Image 1 (spheres, rainbow, N blue to C red):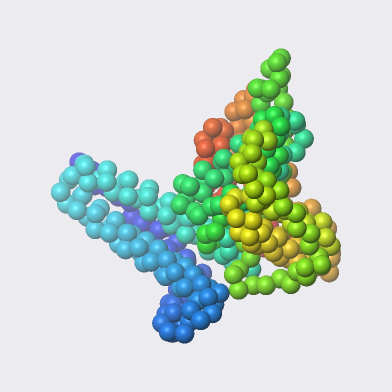
Image 2 (spheres, rainbow, N blue to C red):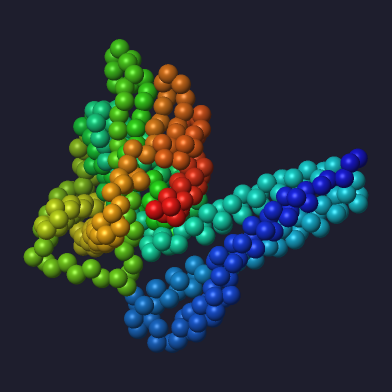
Length: 370
């Protein structure tokens, strides 16, 4: 039996891991972990709960990153030993085990490499995602519901913590809009490439003649405001309305006026939350989303000023970003990166890794060439 030779693959893995260690600046992260440990051990830390949560969250995040890097380095070392064992024993089963492990390690290294590209100001934060149905009638509201399920399935597969804050159901099929929170590290950096206009082409299930229909939905992704961050919102700048939560078709799901709608008068920004049973809890959640959206408005204004100074008049990278075609052929294609697959069903079931990875790389290249 011929020896198994994956020396080139191992060499490439080691080079990539070394580059990742350099980009992440692992010694710096280790020093930060030691400093955070000292702060976390301070018996008076929890006197300030916001600060305590910030410290413990940062410590957990950095420790997880170090553990991931160390685990990958160890798995690459183990692969070399496994190859030697397989070749020494002439064991077909062990060679197959090596090939499976190689694919697994390459996937994990690729994921960590992508994370090194998430170094924007807010990339490490959680995210608030809002989906809105656009043109297309029942097909559009159904499409918005399909996108909501797609992102929640993706988050579930990645073990990301999500909470649906508000859903506005359509009178016919699907939803008019939905807002959910992803409270996990780097959720904003990862999901922000999904922001923009999504387009669906299919044989309409709502058309008696079964004609092909094009519909649209918009996805907005903003960074989740940090617990310690405060954007001053005077009470005079907001209007708070309360109403009863409702389900599909207007069905009441709550007999009290617990749902909350907050309107930010200077910008016209409207935020609703009906996820919690308590009116107070819904108001707190809605204010957090409002803070996140105003934070994003401020960030965009700052970016616009920089672009104006630099003379950059290019359109936003997130516009007209993806087409989902289910008739007359099967394809999902990102119009920015040219990445495409021929299995819309898998994509709508949460298989977004390829699109997100390509989007992050594309964004980084666009920023570098700007």
